[in-house]
Structure formats: C-alpha cells, structure tokens
Image (cartoon, rainbow, N blue to C red; front, side):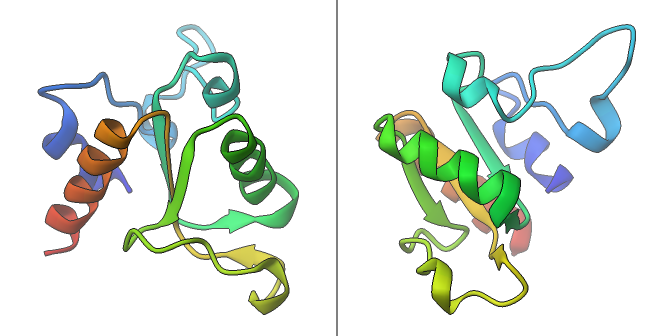
Amino acid sequence: MGDLGPHLGDRYRVYHTKTDYSKTAPIPNFNGLLSGDLTGAVLARGQFIDGAALAFMAEEMGHIVTTLTGDPPPLLHTCDDYMRPGLLIASSPEVHSDLLAAVRLAQA
C-alpha cells in the first residue's frame, strides 16, 4: 500500500509501516486509530487476530470500515484462511473518501 503516499501527502502525514518504521523514531501503529493518533489506515489484508479485530473495534467506535473498493467488509465466516481482504478504516467520511480515491488512483 506504499503507492498511496503520493496521492495523500498533500493533505495528510502518511506513514508506510515497511519503510518508515524505525526503533529510534517510532511511528504510530495501527492501534493509533483507537487512540486518535491516526485518522485513517489502509490494510492490504486483515488477519482476524489483529487487523480485522482492530477494524471491528474502530467500527464500534464510529469509524468507517470498508474494503478497498468501498464495499462493506465481508462477513468473517465467508473469508478464507482467517483473513479479510484489504480494508480502509477512517475516522470520518472525508478521510474515507480521500483514502478510497487514493486507492483507486494507486491501482489505476
């Protein structure tokens, strides 16, 4: 999901966990959605035990959670290998719209 940065960097501070992680300069992790440190996140996929569970908690807190196409996440019992497909998690409709547009541009 590192291709999203150029499509969001003019409005948001964008973190890519694979390239921006550092032991000396920590970045917010996905849990930051629950604490307010992050306004949104894009997951390439969500394992039930971590990403999907945090997405569920974020949704319960009022965040918007969809697939990368903007559709509602599939029901857990319909997923294979305890994985949900890519997920967008956003604190507001505006952030969700921006993330969805960035995903579409990156995939084009």
